[in-house]
Image 1 (tube, helix red, strand yellow):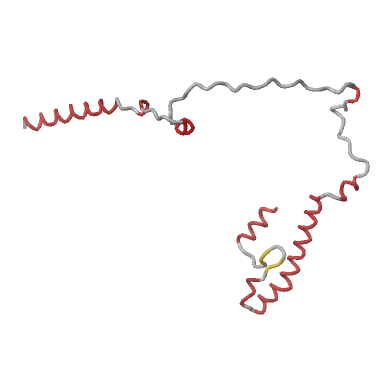
Image 2 (cartoon, rainbow, N blue to C red; image 1 turned 90 degrees about the horizontal axis):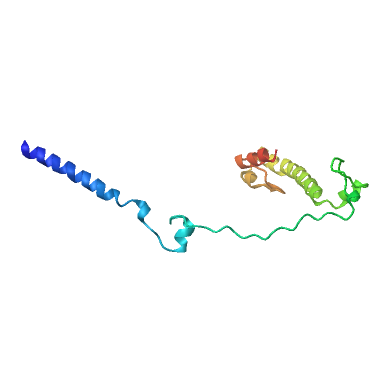
Length: 147
Protein backbone atom coordinates (compact mmCIF):
# COMPACT_ATOMS: atom_id res chain seq x y z
CA UNK A 1 0.00 0.00 0.00
CA UNK A 2 2.81 2.34 0.74
CA UNK A 3 4.24 1.96 -2.73
CA UNK A 4 0.85 2.75 -4.31
CA UNK A 5 0.65 5.99 -2.29
CA UNK A 6 4.16 6.95 -3.31
CA UNK A 7 3.41 6.20 -6.96
CA UNK A 8 0.28 8.37 -6.80
CA UNK A 9 2.20 11.20 -5.16
CA UNK A 10 4.97 10.88 -7.73
CA UNK A 11 2.47 10.87 -10.63
CA UNK A 12 0.66 13.89 -9.19
CA UNK A 13 3.92 15.80 -8.77
CA UNK A 14 4.99 14.80 -12.28
CA UNK A 15 1.70 15.94 -13.82
CA UNK A 16 1.86 19.29 -11.98
CA UNK A 17 5.44 19.78 -13.15
CA UNK A 18 4.50 18.86 -16.75
CA UNK A 19 1.57 21.28 -16.70
CA UNK A 20 3.79 24.08 -15.41
CA UNK A 21 6.45 23.31 -18.01
CA UNK A 22 3.92 23.28 -20.85
CA UNK A 23 2.37 26.52 -19.62
CA UNK A 24 5.66 28.23 -20.37
CA UNK A 25 5.24 27.39 -24.05
CA UNK A 26 2.28 29.65 -24.64
CA UNK A 27 1.36 30.46 -28.24
CA UNK A 28 2.14 34.15 -27.68
CA UNK A 29 5.86 33.39 -27.65
CA UNK A 30 5.96 32.12 -31.23
CA UNK A 31 6.99 34.63 -33.88
CA UNK A 32 6.52 34.02 -37.58
CA UNK A 33 8.81 35.95 -39.84
CA UNK A 34 7.74 37.18 -43.24
CA UNK A 35 5.27 39.48 -44.89
CA UNK A 36 2.82 36.68 -45.63
CA UNK A 37 2.40 36.02 -41.93
CA UNK A 38 1.93 39.75 -41.32
CA UNK A 39 -0.77 39.86 -43.98
CA UNK A 40 -2.53 36.87 -42.43
CA UNK A 41 -2.36 38.50 -39.00
CA UNK A 42 -0.35 35.70 -37.40
CA UNK A 43 2.33 37.97 -35.96
CA UNK A 44 2.01 40.26 -33.01
CA UNK A 45 0.44 43.56 -34.01
CA UNK A 46 2.97 46.04 -35.28
CA UNK A 47 2.76 49.77 -35.18
CA UNK A 48 1.11 51.04 -38.30
CA UNK A 49 1.50 54.54 -39.54
CA UNK A 50 -1.54 56.52 -40.47
CA UNK A 51 -1.86 57.10 -44.19
CA UNK A 52 -0.92 60.56 -45.37
CA UNK A 53 -3.73 62.20 -47.26
CA UNK A 54 -3.58 65.39 -49.20
CA UNK A 55 -5.85 68.19 -48.13
CA UNK A 56 -9.06 68.44 -50.11
CA UNK A 57 -9.92 71.45 -52.14
CA UNK A 58 -12.79 73.52 -50.78
CA UNK A 59 -16.24 73.54 -52.35
CA UNK A 60 -16.50 75.66 -55.44
CA UNK A 61 -19.47 78.01 -55.41
CA UNK A 62 -20.74 79.56 -58.64
CA UNK A 63 -19.89 83.23 -59.05
CA UNK A 64 -23.52 84.34 -58.63
CA UNK A 65 -25.39 82.86 -55.67
CA UNK A 66 -28.72 83.97 -57.17
CA UNK A 67 -28.28 81.37 -59.94
CA UNK A 68 -28.45 78.48 -57.47
CA UNK A 69 -31.83 76.72 -57.38
CA UNK A 70 -33.92 76.79 -54.24
CA UNK A 71 -33.20 73.57 -52.29
CA UNK A 72 -36.85 73.25 -51.22
CA UNK A 73 -38.24 73.62 -54.75
CA UNK A 74 -39.27 70.44 -56.62
CA UNK A 75 -36.93 69.14 -59.28
CA UNK A 76 -37.47 70.60 -62.71
CA UNK A 77 -38.88 68.21 -65.30
CA UNK A 78 -38.16 68.46 -68.99
CA UNK A 79 -40.88 70.16 -70.99
CA UNK A 80 -41.28 67.34 -73.47
CA UNK A 81 -41.17 63.98 -71.70
CA UNK A 82 -41.84 62.13 -74.94
CA UNK A 83 -38.34 63.05 -76.11
CA UNK A 84 -36.82 61.10 -73.23
CA UNK A 85 -39.00 58.07 -73.99
CA UNK A 86 -37.92 57.80 -77.62
CA UNK A 87 -34.55 56.14 -77.02
CA UNK A 88 -34.95 54.82 -73.49
CA UNK A 89 -33.07 51.49 -73.35
CA UNK A 90 -34.56 50.53 -69.98
CA UNK A 91 -38.08 50.94 -71.31
CA UNK A 92 -37.15 48.94 -74.40
CA UNK A 93 -35.90 46.09 -72.20
CA UNK A 94 -39.19 45.99 -70.28
CA UNK A 95 -41.19 45.99 -73.51
CA UNK A 96 -38.94 43.31 -74.98
CA UNK A 97 -39.37 41.12 -71.89
CA UNK A 98 -43.14 41.52 -72.04
CA UNK A 99 -43.13 40.57 -75.73
CA UNK A 100 -40.89 37.57 -75.04
CA UNK A 101 -43.20 36.37 -72.25
CA UNK A 102 -46.19 36.66 -74.57
CA UNK A 103 -44.33 34.81 -77.34
CA UNK A 104 -43.28 32.13 -74.83
CA UNK A 105 -46.87 31.59 -73.70
CA UNK A 106 -48.14 31.37 -77.28
CA UNK A 107 -45.34 29.03 -78.37
CA UNK A 108 -45.78 26.73 -75.38
CA UNK A 109 -49.57 26.65 -75.81
CA UNK A 110 -49.17 25.67 -79.45
CA UNK A 111 -46.27 23.21 -79.29
CA UNK A 112 -45.89 21.95 -75.70
CA UNK A 113 -49.49 21.67 -74.53
CA UNK A 114 -50.58 19.85 -77.68
CA UNK A 115 -47.58 17.50 -77.48
CA UNK A 116 -48.38 16.68 -73.84
CA UNK A 117 -52.04 16.14 -74.70
CA UNK A 118 -51.02 13.69 -77.44
CA UNK A 119 -48.64 11.92 -75.06
CA UNK A 120 -45.55 12.45 -77.19
CA UNK A 121 -42.26 11.46 -75.58
CA UNK A 122 -40.39 14.52 -76.88
CA UNK A 123 -42.80 17.00 -75.25
CA UNK A 124 -40.38 17.76 -72.41
CA UNK A 125 -37.69 18.94 -74.83
CA UNK A 126 -39.85 21.73 -76.34
CA UNK A 127 -38.39 25.15 -75.60
CA UNK A 128 -39.61 28.60 -76.56
CA UNK A 129 -37.91 32.01 -76.74
CA UNK A 130 -37.38 32.19 -72.96
CA UNK A 131 -36.38 28.57 -72.43
CA UNK A 132 -38.08 25.24 -71.86
CA UNK A 133 -41.87 25.11 -71.71
CA UNK A 134 -41.89 22.27 -69.18
CA UNK A 135 -42.69 23.55 -65.69
CA UNK A 136 -40.10 22.76 -63.04
CA UNK A 137 -39.05 23.90 -59.60
CA UNK A 138 -36.41 26.17 -61.11
CA UNK A 139 -38.86 27.89 -63.46
CA UNK A 140 -41.27 28.39 -60.55
CA UNK A 141 -38.48 29.93 -58.46
CA UNK A 142 -37.57 32.22 -61.36
CA UNK A 143 -41.19 33.43 -61.51
CA UNK A 144 -41.34 33.93 -57.73
CA UNK A 145 -38.12 35.94 -57.75
CA UNK A 146 -39.35 38.08 -60.64
CA UNK A 147 -42.33 39.20 -58.58
